[in-house]
Length: 334
Image (cartoon, rainbow, N blue to C red; front, top):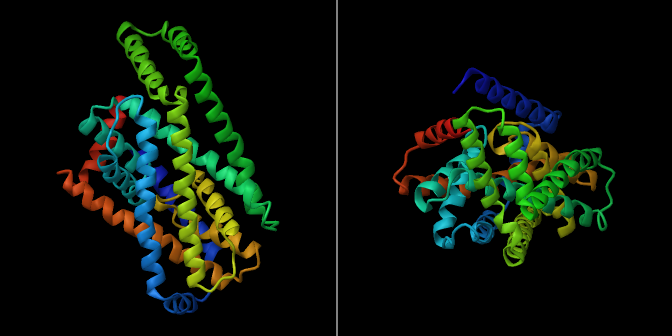
């Protein structure tokens, strides 16, 4: 890893530490732990088992996104989804996404550039859905949280601009070809050919946006997967005895995932707890309950998929160092 990436990773750790401090300042750790210990473990097991449904829904979304390139069975996509989430949870620079792209190329002959474009599209779709969750939930939830407003104000132009660009390029692929041809005209022969080749792979990755059936399927299963994940938040809120409705969970989910734009440590440690607590406190939950909830829900959505991803990674015949090699491959293809 180059020194500048070490600096970025270190910066992420500092960001996480700062958010953790703001989230838990003036709280007694013993009181938080005692509050968590009172939860019925059956609620946690139920919430964790629901994550299996989420993986299937996300895999189905991924199948629709890749269908214009190659039809991949869901049973083969699900392990890659778990591996991707595991890598993102424990390795900096979204190493899980890179590893999933590499495995798609290795297992299913999906070109690196096409796979990367689809993964980027998935993230943009997720961002748009999170924005819609915030907008809809605010019709039912009264909150003046500045954190909610700030996250929405920063994220909205980013994701709306990205999805607009992708749809324009999908609808008018020749526009990208002309732009690349113009920019690559100043490059040497081999670099010009490489730029044009990558642009064609990007166009191929956007192919799914031109199919109404694939586009509808991708949007439907994106909504379905995130709405089920919001139900995990709701189940944990019941375990804590919080009298909160499902719209509050949609708002919390939307805010915390858009806050993922903040460059923190892997797994959004600190950032996750801060924004979950901020939303809950803005609707009247006291700080002890809010931050205890944030710790438990983070663990529930982090631990099962991370363990499953590591198991699937080893079943692929790969080692932990494969993530590092995936990063090296990304550098050589960028």
